[in-house]
Amino acid sequence: MKRAALLLRCSTDAQDYERQKLDLLDTIKGMGYTTSDDLVFGQYITGKDDVRKKDRESVAECKQAVREGKVDAIFINEVSRLSRDSIAGRLFIREFNDEYKIPVYFRDLGMWTINPTTRIVDRSFETMLGFYFDMAQNELKSMKTRFASGKRKNAREGKTIGGAVPFGFYKDEDGKLQVDEEQAQVVRLVYNKYLEDGGSIPSVCRYLLSCGYDKKFNKKFGTGSVRNLLRERRYIGEQRYNLVNPDEPDEAKKQEVYIYKVDAIIDTTIYNKVQIKLDKNRTTETKKVNKDKKIHLLAKLITCPICGDSYTSKTASANKSGERYRIWNYCCVSKYNFSECTSDITLNADNIESIIWQLTKREILALQELSLEERQSKIDEAEQKLASYKDELDVIAKSIDKLNVKKKKLVALFLDIEDDDTAIFNEQREAINKEIDSYNNRIQFLNTEITICEGNIARFKEADFTDEVLDKIEQDLLKKKELIKEYIKVIRPYRLTKARLILEVESKQTNYCILFEPRNSKRRCWYIQSSLAQWQNGLLKTSTAPLGNFFYIPMASLLLDEPDDLDAIASFEDMKEICSINNYVIEY
Image 1: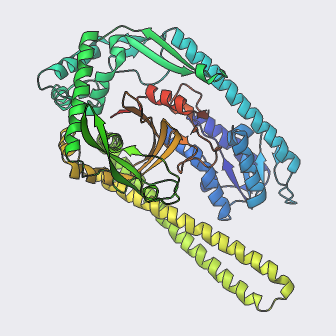
Image 2: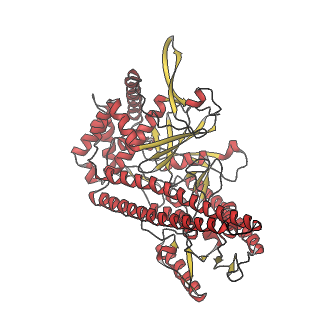
Image 3: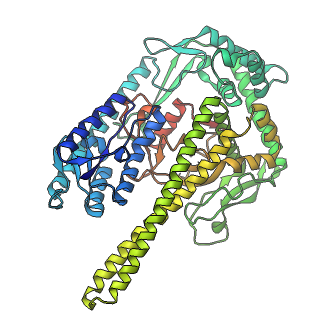
C-alpha cells in the first residue's frame, strides 16, 4: 500500500492538532494510502517552546523521510498550514515538484500538485498555489496591522501590551498594572539593602534567600533578577512603550513612544541613588579587569562569517583627559594581515567580553533554576535524542554501503554498454554520488548533535553553581575564560549598519542572536534565543523562510499577544522592542 506523510502546522491547541490529524487520516484512508507515527510531522508536544520547535522542524524531517524513500505522497490540511509567506511557499512546492517529484495533496482545495497516477506536474495548480500563498501573506500583514493597532490602543489607555508583569505589580481585569503591596515591600527592601554601606547585588541576593523570599514568592532572586529590579523604571511610576506602526511609510515616524503613569513603589530620589551606585560599581569592575587585560576571554571563540578565520585581539592607543591608555579590540586575523577578507568589524574587548559573560551566567543560572525532576527529564530527553542519533548513524552507514555496491555494479555494467549510453551512466553515477554526499552531510550534522547531547547531559548532572561561586569566578580571569569556553562554542558578528551589529552565539545549550549597538550610550544590548526567532542573513537562519536583514518569528504568541499559529517578520527595531517587553536585555 502507498505511504502518506502528514504535514501539520501545529499550534498550542492540542484539540486543533488532533482535528487536523483526524481529518487527514480520513482523507488518506479514502484514497488508499496508509501512514505511521514516524510519518506524521508536526506532532503536538506539551509546552510552547517544544511545540514551536516541532512545528518548524517538521518540514526538514518530512524532507529527510522523502530522501530516504519512505514517502509516496504528502497530505496537508490547508494552504495556510504550509506557509504564510509567498516566497517560502512557492519554494516548497517547486522543490517537491521538480527535485523530489513527490505529489502533495491540499485537503482544503481537493487538488494534487502532481497526478499520483500519471506523475505529471500540474503547473496550472502550481501557479494557483502561488496566489493562495500571496493571499495568506496579505492576511498576515492585515493581522499585523490589526494587532499593532490594538497594542497602540492599549498603550494609549495605559494597559499592558504583553511581556512579563514586573515583580511588585499585578495586572487587573482591565489590563492595567496595580501595586501588589506584599511584593512591593520586598522591592523597597531590595533598594534599601543595596544602598546600605557595603551593600552589593550578591549581598542582597543572600539576604533575600536567608529570609526565605524565594520560596514565599516562588521566585529565584539571583544576581540577574535583582539587578533587573534595581533598574526597573516602572517602580518610580513610569511605564514606557516604543511601538512600531507597520502602516507608516515614513521610517522617521514609524516608531511611536507611549509613556503613562502607574502607582510608584520607589521614591525617585532613592531610585536615582541606586542608579549612581550601580554605574559606579560597574565602572570599578571594568577598571579591575583592565589591569589584567593580557587574558583575552574570547580568544578563538569569535569567527569571521566572511572568511571563516578567527578574530584576534589587538591593542590600540587612545587619549582621554590628557592620559594615554590602551584599548583592546577583537578583529578578523585575515583582515589584519591584509588578506582579501572584506570584514570591517572591530569589537571592543571590554564590551563584548562583558556581554558574553553575562549571557554565560544566564545560561548557567537557567540550569540551576531547574528542579531535580526537571533536570532528570532533560537528561532523559537528551539520552533519547542521543540514542536516536546513533541509531540513525547506523542506518545511514548501511545506506551508504548499499549505494557503494550499487555504484560498483553500475561501473561493471558500464564496461558492456555502448558509447551512446555513456551519458546515462554518468547521470546515474552523479545521482548516486549526490545521494552519498547528502548522507555525509547528515552524518556531520548528527555527530555535532551527539556532541551537544553528551555535553548537555554532563551539564545537567554537574554540581550547582551558586551566585556566590559565580562571583568568585568573576574575579579570576582564567577561571572565567575556562567557564565561557565550556558553554560557548562560537560567536559570529555581522554588520547590519555602521551602528548596528548582529552577534550569532552558538552555546552548548542553545543558540542566540544578540542585537548590539556599539555606540549605545546606555551600554545595553538585546538577545533572543534562536528557537524563538532567527535572523535571516546568518548561519542560524530558517531555510523555509525568506532571506533578508530581518528576524523570522515562527510562532509570535511565544513573544507577543498574537494568535498561536501566527508567524511574523520583525526588523532590528521591532526585535529590540520585543526583547525589551520580555526582559531579554543585557547591560554591560
